[in-house]
Amino acid sequence: MNLKKVFSTLAVLLLLLTCSNPINGNDKTLLWKVSGNGLDHASWIFGTHHLVPLTFLDSIPGIQEAFDKSEQTVGELDMGNMGQMQMEIMGRAMMPQGTTYESLMSEADRAKLDSILTSLLGIGLDQFGGLRPAMLQNLISVTLYQQYYPTLTDGVGLDQYFQEEALKQNRPVVGLENTDDQIYVLLEMQPLERQAELLACMINHPELLKEQMDKLQQTYHAQDLEALWALYTEEDPADPCPSTKEEKYALNGARNEKWLKKLPTIMADKSSFIAVGCLHLPGEEGLIEGLRKLGYKVEPVH
Image 1 (cartoon, rainbow, N blue to C red):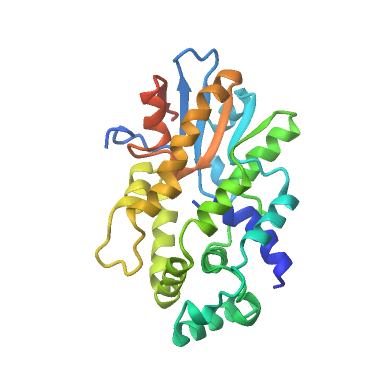
Image 2 (tube, helix red, strand yellow; image 1 turned 45 degrees about the vertical axis):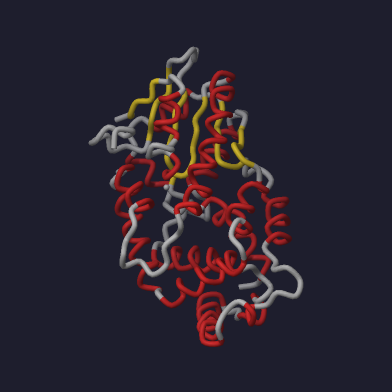
């Protein structure tokens, strides 16, 4: 696999890999209706999983009706300009000049990383060595996910599908973030040393990654937001590679806070179909509870 193809794949997948009383117990659904608080027309929020097939939508009651009633589609990112996105990723994914994996990882970990990259992608650390550890971690994760679950239809994820359908119907597409925002969170937020630490841990515990992927698949297909939130937030004493609370907040809660400042204006302007990663919906800091605190009625669609 050449580097151009790698970046093209990641432009679609990498940037969007992110799914108590806020959910009300047994309301197992990924689709929620937002109304009240002065809205003339309802809007809807749908929690996506960026690596499931489009056929999954057949299991979501009311989703086609909700999409058809909306006047615009809202996503984490406006995916309309993929060429520009690829260029930005390529520039920002590179390590600072003078920084090498020799200074970030042990010889044994470098050898294992080289072996895994070569096995998965046909290219080793000699060519990938200029990329940030976070980039390699996401690249390995996405590649393994596609091997374990070869589910994507023509490479189109749910988020991209809804945006493309909106454009076919001459509806606006609104991004809650820009490419710069997402690249920062996924590739630059953590120091390189921390990125290398997490990368080394992942390649030394491949069974953990598969276990986490299996649990994510099961809970998402069960449309169980509470279980998804528990997977993300609960600390496992046996986890050798835990994320810190600060890292989890930066990836999820902090972004939700920014989106909750934008969504009232967006929904007041037009009835909106809002499709974002499922983990942005549940929890005290999630969009469902956040919109309720702002005075909206947010109810499950069954």
